[in-house]
Every structure is written in C-alpha cells, then in structure tokens.
Length: 242
Image (cartoon, rainbow, N blue to C red; front, side, top):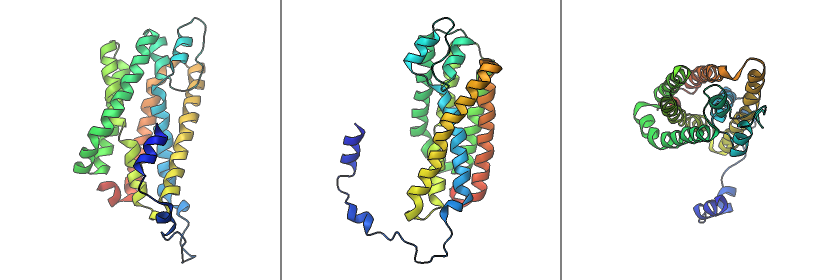
C-alpha cells in the first residue's frame, strides 16, 4: 500500500530535478552540519519521545501470553498493557483496546493540534502539550476506574501526538535544504534507538522493582522531554516560536 501511495504521490517528479540542485559546498570551510547542537538535542528528544510512545502498544500475541499463568511478556516493549493486566487486573482483551484508544488519541492530536501550534507559536504550544500530557499521566497514577483510565490514555496520546512533527519542523528550519534529509534522518534514527533501549531498561526495572511503577517512570521521561524542548526552543530561537 505504501509503495502504491508513494508512487502515485510523486508520479510527476523526476530524478533530474534533484540532480540539478546544488549539492556541493563551494566553500570548503563551511561547518559540518552534523556538529550542530540542534541535531543532537533533537535526537535525544526523539530518543525519549519514542521511549514514552513505545510503551503504549503490544501485539495480540504478547497479550495472549500475558493472560496465562507464570508467563512473562514476549518483549521488553509496550509495557502499558502489562501494567493494566498485572496491577489494575484488567482482562487482556480490554487492555489491548486501551492501547488502541491511546493510538486513536495520537491520530486525533496529529490532525487537530497543528492549527493550534500555528496560532499560538510552536514553542509555547508544544510546552503546553507536554504539560497537559504530564497532567494526564498523573491522573493515570491515581485513577482506578477503567473508564477514567481509558479517557486519560486517549488524552495522553492526543497531547503527545504533535511532538514528533514539531521537532522535525524546528530541526529542518535550522539546516540548509541540501543537508536537510540527512540531518533529520539522523535525528529520527536516534529516536528509533530510544524505542528499543528505553523499553528494555523499563523491562529490567519491572523485573527488579515492579511494573506498578511504570507510570512514574513514564512521567519522569516526559519531564525530561519538557526540559529538552525548552533547550531546543532556546537554541533554535525564532524557528521554535513561529
């Protein structure tokens, strides 16, 4: 499906259009763009973001294994479902639907909050989104009623949704067009590493401390996201404000 969609979307583009663009620095003294602090800070931002987002979904196969006695999860990723089953004693089917509700909130947030960011300014808007997501996470810590937890999961996904594209917009605005693809791809690659490393670390924590502290860990990671976004906004200046 992606192959067909991409082929159709770029059906009028030709390789010569890219080849004719200036791609070589005539001035050899130009600083290597990979030395820019904005790249590495955005990369770390994505690392923590993927760690938070990746803990909100688990496959049906892993769900089925969790429903049996004396069985540990098949993967060190997506621990929110494990949390719901083990600490809130929710059945596996409902836990799986809770994960879907989180991603539904993410989808709605991507569509709805873009206009808000443009109107308010990206620096202020994204900071507000992170604070709102933290509020939803605090509510999840104290809520025990299933309906309230499902609502807060959707709210958390809703406000986390704009973080990923906002980081790309800010980072792309700080780079030359010829360097933009490689710079943004490098930052996203660092984020993908976070999607593997942080859930693995959480798995170790769950083994030695207990899965009941999952929401506290996610809240701590989100606080780090807020600090990183504040740093990105300070470095990128007007790009993060507009």
